[in-house]
Image (cartoon, rainbow, N blue to C red; front, side):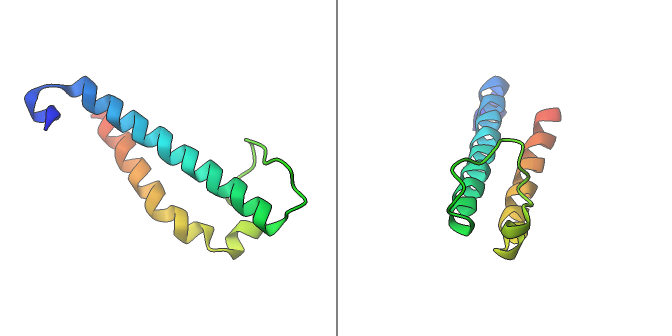
Length: 80
């Protein structure tokens, strides 16, 4: 493991990439579900919340809860 060998920068980069990938996945999932719930929408604005009213009906909170926990752990590790 790189972190135990002193390569902290490589591990920080991996954490940052993981965070970015999770955020991208959340955005893509939200956009896909918006189109599924309301096909007349052509775009999903960046500023739209993941907690969109239609989305909660589809269990978005339960889907994103583990992801949010993982993201928080990644952020916590980066702060150390």
